[in-house]
Image (cartoon, rainbow, N blue to C red; front, side, top):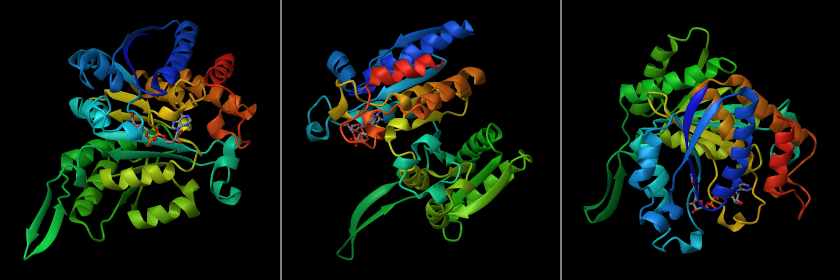
Length: 358
Ligand code: NAD
């Protein structure tokens, strides 16, 4: 297979976990005789230094000409957030990138590897044989994109944020969730607040309509407050969770606690045409940068998602996931997933061992 991939390492730990991930990509490329053209672009603080812009035109062109985007992370130390290089960096780069390519749905797997049960904050009896959830979140609608207003009325300070959805926005992300369920365990739990909100009532009707196109997938509806509770009582009941932007923002961060480290969590964002960006769920972790101690697994699993969802290279994706699993089974840990303090192997060593299983 011949494909072009835009590679955007970004800042902080981004470049070092990306360079390790590209070692995995090269091995898969050789093993399966693929031809991947990798075109690297600057984004975030590193782009600002070179082009005086967090998301320069040249990077936009690289992404537009690619078949998929593999992204690292952007942003600087929080105490330097007002420095020109870092001011509004995330907003001007990753958020602008999502907007430019209309990435309207985000998927975030939250998995508890059986080997890493000890770093999951839930009890063994609740984890059972492992938690394996994918959250599909709408990204371009909801209260974040409606009108925001702060004003004074009758001498009282007031504020309002308008929550809006149209049927097309809901239908696009719903199809995404049902397609995802078909590649997994054929169950979608759609999460809303339909007992109160009109937007949720519309959400529920459209999701039910879309669900009729997927008779092989079981659809259930759940109120968001109940879902938050079920996360901690019986998380193993979920396969694919489909939800709106605001609820998804909160639930996906709650689910981020399950694996035990952001360094294990990949994610992907899709537009209506299926073009996608793949990135770790975490940020640039500036305090770890340059030390060769960051966990490369989230970035490596983002590559596996890219193979699976953008190129339909299922065997290649599976080999990467199994290699990660075997590495964890063998007891190898970077610092973030190591229960013994001041221990853990390096980013490079972790990748060496994953590579040895491919
Ligand atoms: P962060 O995700 O960088 O770090 C949060 C915690 O997770 C830290 O303890 C960090 O050490 C840990 N962590 C994250 N990835 C890890 C990995 N691969 N290996 C080991 N540990 C890992 O979030 P933060 O500290 O709030 O933000 C740092 C910078 O990242 C900020 O500038 C922020 O704006 C930016 N950020 C960028 C993105 C993005 O690029 N999409 C997302 C979130 C935050």
